[in-house]
Image 1 (cartoon, helix red, strand yellow):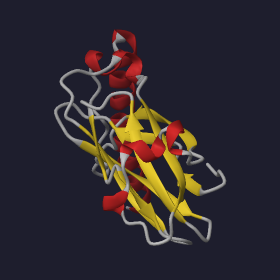
Image 2: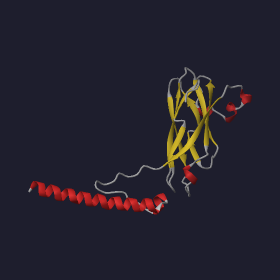
Image 3: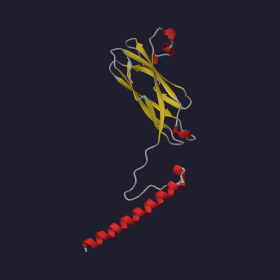
Image 4: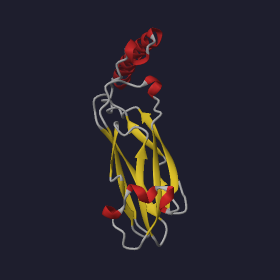
Length: 177
C-alpha cells in the first residue's frame, strides 16, 4: 500500500500455518520521501506476535525489513481464519533522528505529529507440501478432507492408474519385440 510517507508490502501478512511451530513473515517499509520517517508497528494480539523492530526510523529513500513472528499455536483455528490485525503508524521525524529516540508519545495526537495509519490483515495459508516422488500419489485419508467417498474415489483412481501403467508397459514390451 502506498501512502504519503511509506510504501508497505505486503498488506496481508501471510503465515504458512503449522501447529506447534513459530512462523515468521517479513514486512517491508520503503521511505519514498526525502525526510526521516519514524514508524511503529502495533497488533491487536501482542501475546501472539513478536515484531522486530517494532519501532524505528526509515532513512530518506531507503527501506527496512520488519520481521513478524507468530508464536507456536496449539490448535488449528476454525476455517483457518484469523481476525488479528496490525497497524503501522508513521510520521516525518526530525533529520538525524535514530531508532532509540522514537517514543510512544511521538505517535499520540497530543505530540503534534501528523501520524499516518496503515492497517494490515493476517492471513493463514496451508504450509507448502513436500514434493512427491515420481510415480507416487499422495495418500488420502478421511481426516485429510473429512469425506469418505472422496477417499474411496482416490483409492479407485490410484488402482486404475496402476492398471493403466501396467497395460502400457505390456503394450510397449509387445510392440518392441
